[in-house]
Length: 334
Image (cartoon, rainbow, N blue to C red):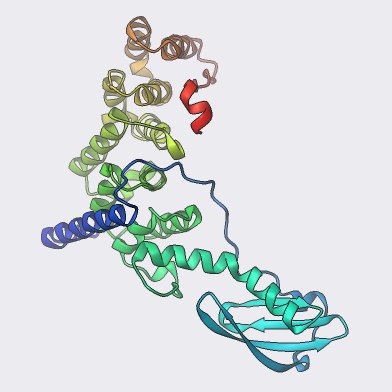
């Protein structure tokens, strides 16, 4: 197992991430209110080459033109056939077709929009002036962590996947903890969801008991003061604690979180406790008792019913549990 990066470099990376978050807040007009993230749109590139569908031959690519798009001048190879005018931009691995060269170039620009939007989203996140032309897998741990906050959720997902591929690099762990503890970046919920998904396999990212406790504390804090459940991040925290870390920490922490000031956090805790009992059956009686007591004292009427029903489902032991309630304000916001 590779040892953690030295304390000074770890402190530097955390400071760098914190300073970056502050700059992103300022770039967003100073707002620190969490933003509801859009749904992830999976990105595939390059698209299927249109010339292949019309059997355009290598010898047909006899012309060359260029087009100004997205602040750049792109060179385009041209093939004129009975099926129309084809263009191929090797720089971005893209082809287009039209009845004229003008139409082909117009279609080429339109088809390139998803690529350029993605590359500019990465550039904004990494504070790069020009579009990002590299690959995510080449980035440093700090930059990969920044991309978890990207406006483009597919970029964040790809960054998460790349982090997952580097289990021996312990420099990620303190950065991921900082993501869970962030309360300022508008895209923090989607970033936190990514971290929680990684922490389903928490031992791969940390060195022993102290690190695990640090991660659990960060998850508890996330549940404790949750203002929203955008990206289902708070729900996910309960799942990780109850379904993946139920033995040493999860059960007791979720029992504590029944008393969280956040009703969103309490909802996550009630759900997570169901999974605790699945994995730690010796906590059955303690959890059922706590849920039934909570149902008597819970101030939110929906959660009173939810806690009582969850206790009944645990006792019934039929492998299913009641669906968590949606609060009235969430029906519009989510």
